[in-house]
Structure formats: C-alpha cells, structure tokens
Picture 1 (cartoon, rainbow, N blue to C red):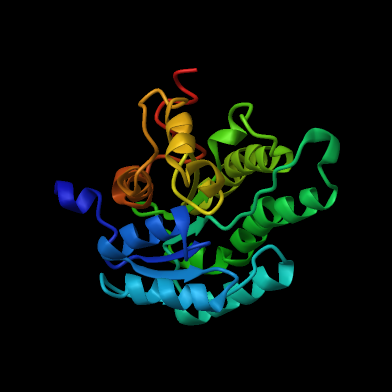
Picture 2: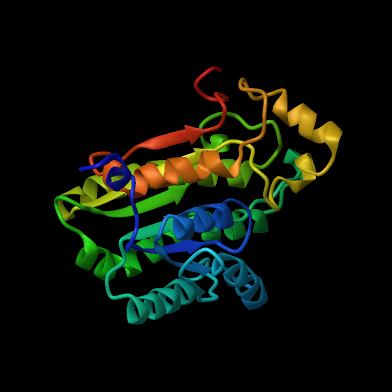
Length: 260
C-alpha cells in the first residue's frame, strides 16, 4: 500500500455530529477535503446550511439537522442517515454541551443537559447506527467510531465545569467499553481528547489577547490547537493507518496531560 493510500479516506462515508462549527466543522472540512462523503448534523438548520455551503466548495457534503441529546432525536438522525448511506464507514460523535458555575451555585439542571448531550446522546446514536456501521465493516478495513472527549476528562480543569469534566471522563471510559464489545465486529472505537481549540465553548477564554495568552501559557507547546492538529489525528484514526487501534484515548493537547 502506498503512503497516500495508507492515510486515504477517499470514497468513505462519514457522519460528524456538532459539525456546523468549532472542532466538528474542522473535522468535517478535513474529511471532505480528503475525499470523504460527509454528512454533518447539529440542532440548528440554518447553521447546518451555512456549513454545507462552505464544505461543498471542497467536495461532497450534506446536512441533517437533529438534536442527539434526546433519544428520539438520535433515532431520527440515525434513520435519516441510514436511508441516505446504507454503509457508514465513520461516525464522529462530537456534539456536546458545557456549563460553568461556582461550586455553591452549580445547578442540578446542568447535569441533565450536559450528560444528555455528551454521554447519553453519543451512546444512543452509536447504538442506533450499528446497522450501517456493521454493513461497512471488514477485517481489513474496519468501520470507525471516533468520540470527541476532552483534556478536562483526563485532568482536573482550571474552570468550574463540574458536569462537563465528569461527562468527558465518562466518554473516555464508554469509548473503551464500546471498543471491547465491537472489536469482534470489525468496528474500532477511539476517542480524541482535545486541549484548547477555537470553538464556541472556549470563546470566553480565547476571544481576547490576554485570555488567549493566559491559556497558551498553560500548554507546554505554548499555543492553541490548530485545525491541522485535530484533522491530522482524525485522518489517522479514520484511515487504514489507524485500523489496528481501538480503545485508545488520544490527547491532542500540546502536552497538557502528558507533560504534567
């Protein structure tokens, strides 16, 4: 196999949830540019339309708006995806939510909202898409599930985001559990744990030079993550190059965990 073929996703089908902005849009853009047929999903139809208009400049992209934080929303998205692409080679579970508040004021509602979006939604959608994932899977070229966790699920966060950090730790363990269960069906399940990247969730820290510099100072490599950083890891996990890896949680964080 040639080196370009080793990292190729050309002709593969992918679903990226939360794909209309932030890390999800970065991943979707990279997959489209690499030749995959990409479906994105997020709650807001207008955001999906805007993202597809951009992505379609590079290749084949479409959208199915859905709210995967509910069981009905996940099931509806899975049904629509299955009708469109009977074989799904890659599922990127990126959709999520966060909440920050001081310990004494942290609301009970923050647990349901964040856990539903980050953990239950990810599980439900993976479960509902087992049919097209199984249809795409083979021993030589497994189907792939990539869950987007967080560095905050691997270390104590700087901010008071109690339900978010707990949910991402749950994502990492659920990734390993699903990987063990699905390995025999030629479906790999891995997680990426990003450090600081540009997104709506991190805008409160990165939207000014002072805050950006403060965050970058906590990263051993001294910078915020770039699109190339997250796309490179995704392409590795989604291509033949990553076919022998499952149950892994890969920090893409500039050394925040590994150098601590």
